[in-house]
Image (cartoon, rainbow, N blue to C red; front, top):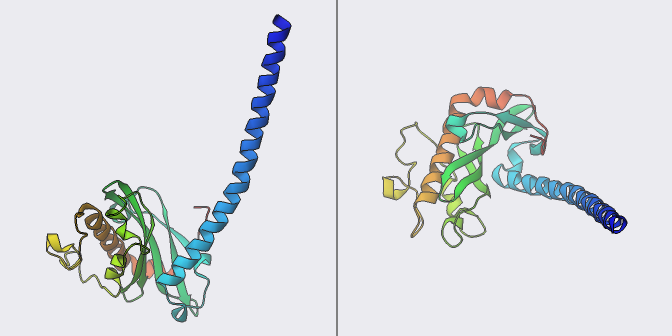
Length: 212
């Protein structure tokens, strides 16, 4: 009986070891593939936000790390991507977090010119309600294009609110929390840029894409 139990235990242990090894191998293989796809998608989004004609560098190649819980919505460092022309910073794409979305964090990236103009905004990830809050995705709605061409005249610029709060930006029918949080996050990112423009556009690359 003891021999049988020992044998079965060894077989179970070996099986568990093989399964663990297999899972680890699959995870490693898929991790590399996922990271590769993430970088392809990042490059695609960056080229949507910052027009190719205004810069001559590879956007993913000039990554810098930013840290401002007050303006970027998280204690963690977030990446930004500097566009340069003849080695001079001409625009930046800043990742930021809206921590007060309806269902949690909304990860956003904001393209801003050296003049402070919003070149474009895209949603990188979110957990908002399908059919309502997911209108922050470009494939679901053009709402994110509401920011294109905007300038933040001051931190008290009333236009940078949803219409329900007296601003110029539409909220969604049946949903206000998501767009309110989103507008606030974009406004804060632009405010952060305006206050630190010279430093941000001249900071040398100091992070590797995908390894922040």
